[in-house]
Length: 215
Image (cartoon, rainbow, N blue to C red; front, top):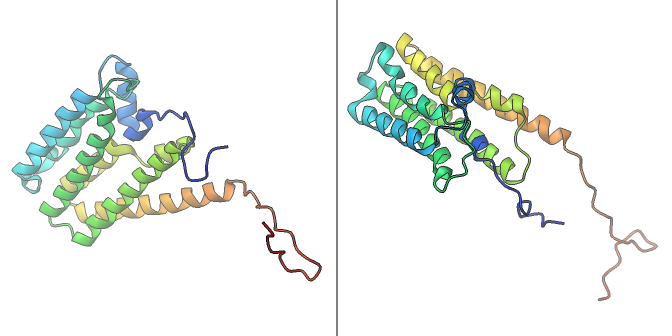
């Protein structure tokens, strides 16, 4: 049996799970099939997002707030690719970093309270860490939990909509609270549903004590 502190031997990790695509990105991936390689559109979307961040996301208004998420959706069209290329492993971390930078820069430049931005980023990072850990052990999160997390595209579009309506602090707080409750609920139910393996009790002597080892 594998050691208790090591991943399952020979377990291959599906990088598409680590992408954390939402409903829209997954739908685009189904339409495009496996024809579009993942790294090029992901890197392109990340570069455009970085340029907009440096230009000042806080100065954007209206529909222009959706520009980073809209451009990054090019990567969603590659979600159906098997991610078996030499550099395809880079797509998930690039998506993660782009989402973090977008949420951090938009919140900071638009005047969202720092603690609220921190809580949202922490909730998103914990969800990502949960997916990585479970996938490493060959037991990915349930499908309903992955859908409920909205995906990087859903979260970015929701925040952009909040900024367009002038409800950015409320949107950050609502999304942070939702993701935190979802994480606690899903983790708790998963632990309760996991069978518990009882360790064998050590031998005891006639007085009820544990016999000392003689070896």
